[in-house]
Amino acid sequence: PITAAITGVAAYTPDYVLTNKELEQMVDTNDEWITTRTGIKQRHILKGEGLGASYLGVQAVKKLLEKTNSRPEEIDLLICATATPDMMFPATANIIQYEAGLVNAFSFDLMAACSGFLFGLTTAAQYIQSGRYKKVILVGADKMSSIVDYTDRSTCVLFGDGAGAVLLEPNTEGYGLLDHVHYTNGAGWVHLHMKAGGSRRPASHETVEAREHFVYQEGANVFKHAVVGMAEASYEILERNQLSSDDIAWLVPHQANKRIIDATAQRMGLDENKVMLNIDKYGNTTNATIPLCLRDYEARLKKGDLLVLAAFGGGFTWGASLVKW
Ligand code: ACO
Image (cartoon, rainbow, N blue to C red):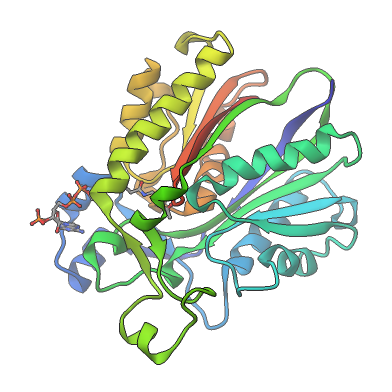
């Protein structure tokens, strides 16, 4: 059987760094609260008029092409996982396809909030496993700063901007995506969403005045569901594959809160030195967290390592995947 192997990873974060200290000047918060409650020390923010998530995605995709010695015209498909598209339509993936010169690729966006990269990996893998497509790029790109209210201390400390991309290619030796468990509980939408700007509540003077174009999150409620969802899915992927924590080289968790990550590792019985962690540097970059982790830890990954990727996000959506590196 054909599997979809990850044959390259690249990522991009914008230059501007927003530190906890700087946030102290903007809202009633402090470095100590942010660090102990979330694990975040700083986040990168995209500055510049007219630059959206596609800008971040293009940088990551161009780096990926260079790193994997791929020519843009060789790419068959580009999937962009994003919660902050450049525009309502067309897909942000199309803009990246154009700007990165992927002239032979078809492209579309995939939306599953913070689980987008995880669900996108499974989606991308189907195209490879079908035998028809040879080079598929999955890019997770989010400009969270575009939907964050920098007067709301309960959300503005959490998020950052970034993008990460992987190249997927067919493999017949059993490398790549091996298994997944994915879940949705649509009832959870009420606890984490953006109220206006969609077809239900189009943008108007009222929606702007009511600050409805920003992330709305009931933090403690989402936290409870995230801990259970990410931990149980990660445990389930081990059980389904008759693996123990000893078999796993790395947990690659979505970076929303260090305490959620710790709880997940604990449920799996996994040592903390097997957990990829970079939330301190980037905060929650939504669809970019998992590829940013893979990029940052790439030098420590060995061929054949078993990885568990796990995420929880708006929707609610969550899950875990098993990858042989
Ligand atoms: N600085 C100082 N105090 C703060 C801050 C801040 N930045 N933010 C909130 N507080 C205060 C609150 O007002 C509250 O004060 P009160 O007790 O006087 O009312 C107190 O701190 C505790 O607030 P909680 O919200 O209960 O704090 P909690 O420990 O739950 O941490 C957090 C909040 C970090 C948001 C946490 O709930 C969390 O991580 N939630 C999950 C986030 C997540 O996983 N999201 C899903 C992915 S995102 C996506 O899909 C787009």
